[in-house]
Amino acid sequence: QVQLVESGGGLVQAGESLRLSCAASGRAFSTYAMGWFRQAPGKEREFVAAISRSGGSTYYADSVKGRFTISRDNAKNTVYLQMISLKPEDTAVYYCGADLRLYGVQFAPGEYDYWGQGTQVTVSS
Image (tube, rainbow, N blue to C red; front, side, top):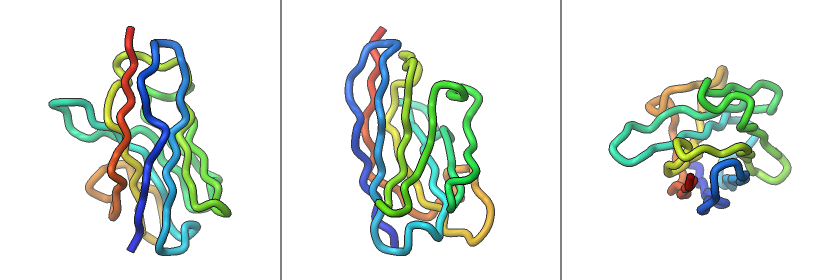
């Protein structure tokens, strides 16, 4: 079992920054990959970024590449999403997910085993 709790969302203006955090508990944090996804109203949940168990490999959706940075601190059982140069189209509920597979990193929401409750990010123009 893994429990995930996101925080750090809020209302910002276009061009500003936010840092999301996702605190994990339960199974040893360093044994699973983590991902960030987002879901806007009326749309499906989409991949944003993912990070390997060690943090040595990171992956990004094209829409956020160069603006978002995923990182993890295995000593603090926390994964982060630093977001800069935010755009109105980044507005969504952001979710962190845990992928308990032994190898690899997944990019589809259906491949993740546990989810947090989500945190709202709203970017005004």
